[in-house]
Image 1: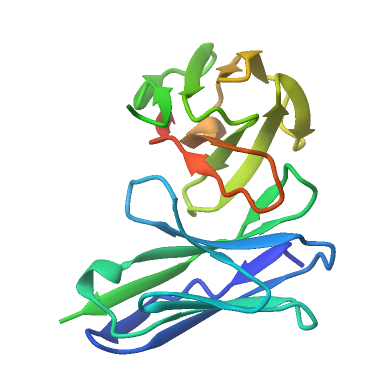
Image 2: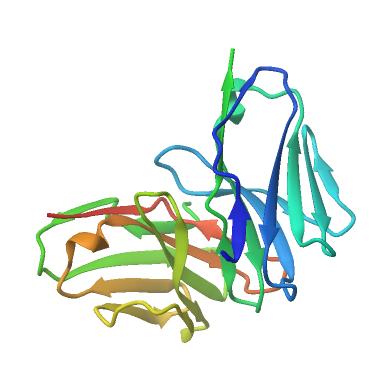
Length: 109
Length: 113
């Protein structure tokens, strides 16, 4: 089983739609969690950290379920510019961050 | 004022050659990393250094040798390049604390012919 698993997609959604991605992780000792965004031929960039109580940043909401070992990302009111690959990242041990394979989102007009 | 910069951006070379990729960060971070992103877009950690000390070495062939002259620099030297080494290599840095995210460089696209 992979350490961090994501549905690769692609998720094709119209503008204005709400879309949700899930990510599962295998190591229960995982300490912190992030969502990154990667555009084609670019470096990954931090979208948001994921906190135990869940957190929101504008149209983006992240949730963590430690008991079931998954995290989620909800995007409301999708924009064309949201089209990208969304990477789930899990940290265990202070210096080790493991990336999921990414979920591709395509928002169409 | 680039935070994490790596050079070169593109590297095309022949099998058997030796090449280096340089990385520098001006964020004052203690920890630096090298990640490899293959053709399937999977980002895999290769090495991690904390204050110039090797922390993580993820079963990377000995042909890959990281060097950290100081905590702001982490270079990657690759000997005897193989076709399978073709990938995008990303340097990154972080504070190394539990909730610290990674900051990535722009990537080096290595093509071995």
